[in-house]
Length: 164
Image (cartoon, helix red, strand yellow):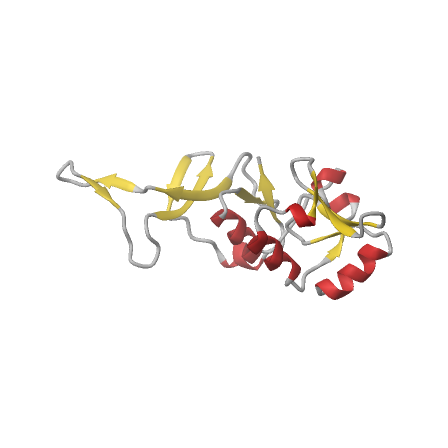
């Protein structure tokens, strides 16, 4: 649903969130404002947001839904999301994994300041014209794989989740 509809439900007393969120938003009738319950356990008045652009991007989303115990981590659940949402969070520095991966403690994360040693024993700093100096790293049971590529199944799945 879009935010106009989500705001309607907020004002009726429902907790609302985006799929990838660990927390949720509620409506405070006394203050006549939105209160944001964050993944870190903080409760913030939306008017106190430090990241206005991020908050506005969330408001403009059309993926709003009800925060339920089973899909909201601060309520005891797990937030599953699409690959598109997972990549957005990787870019922000979070670690993500698929529920469907069979290895324990496997995840992807953003690797920055990437460099390597070539056959002449020289350290080369990666600097790609489109990517800059970063790539996605897959951390798995056999070590770290830089430049991880998602499979079709990874890209089409909706079982991505944030890992600590």
